[in-house]
Length: 544
Image (cartoon, rainbow, N blue to C red):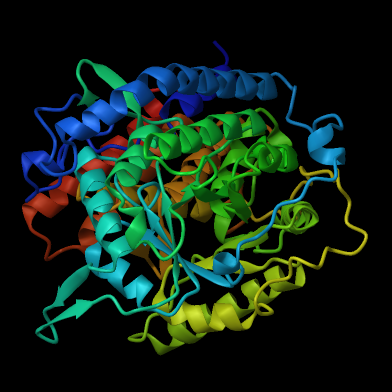
């Protein structure tokens, strides 16, 4: 098997199945069942009840085989790309040539900023919903550890948030902070189609996407909602997958005695094949979908993944790639063209640099970067953006016209643009590789200790940025004979597996020196994080 074939196998099978080998310390057995591990027993009372299981089993029987077929097609598409048959625009069809349109409901016309964060963090959920943001996405996916206990806690928080009863105790101020009354739209992001969940249906794995949506929908009292139940569809890779989501939404709605089109959604365009099929995807979900969002960090990872065979796609150091680089910008302009043509919203991506009131220089830099990034998105006719910190909300909102720009389309927009423009610049350095190694070790430590997203050096890192770093390292090894990676003096450093292993050792040692006061448990967790991070490459023979 060739290096690229081995890499293909690894990245198809592993990415997204992000569960630590051991439970976070201090968590009970009920709170650390891993997403791809068997459950030790029944789930939390009040969530997975006998009534819910009666509701769920027919869904499992209908949709899980279909889910697995779709995942198998993803693997075939990726394998074809690595043989040189890359994604492309689909032929004209009713989806692209027809006169159909979507009526955007009044309750979601203003989505100039959508706050996003992990649903299992009760305090953050309350702060996001109290921020004044027009929208909030409560995340069960990339910013949360994919474990059964975290999922159940996240669903519990979502249900309370939707009813307006969620609160948290503020230790510093010695008071309970409740949710404020607001018109904020709540979207819930389930896990992607690529993930399975054990411990729900006896002896069988089920779809993580399906169980997340079903749990929320089953336990939601729609009479208490201020707007229809709404989801954020993640990780889609084809227009065909939209049909799965459509049928899931409609089957669940009918089972609850609701209109077939009751459940609404937005969807992320965050994979390379998906951006070639966005209009077809919208068409297949046209009774439910309200907008598309450019999930640019996962999109960047996917772009690398689908071009992994090509040495011309070995990207520069991540921190030298600007937010308006051509492979982002062309998609950023295509999404409003397609969405506005059909009457729905186009939402921009996340700005990773976070403000910090305790660090004035960082705070000023982060907010300035945010304003520039969102102004660029508004100029591209986006209708809003994503942020992850309440201090970002006002600045983000101010960059976009109220309530949206759906009546505007980019002038002279090309409907079928070239979406694989190569990146200019040659800043491919061993320091960039070190930064990537350090980033994945520190991110993996967060996963081991129960965090799906970690603020590292001012940047919010989650599974998407972890994927970018791992793929970048793999690129540099797979093509080290063709693409030079240099040191500070300009000398080429061959990125062999042995070198990368040495970098993992050195970066772990540096982290442990910086943590000189840390207890042995913490140091052991970092060592485990280093082992897991490297094994994601070595044990799966990516670097063999």
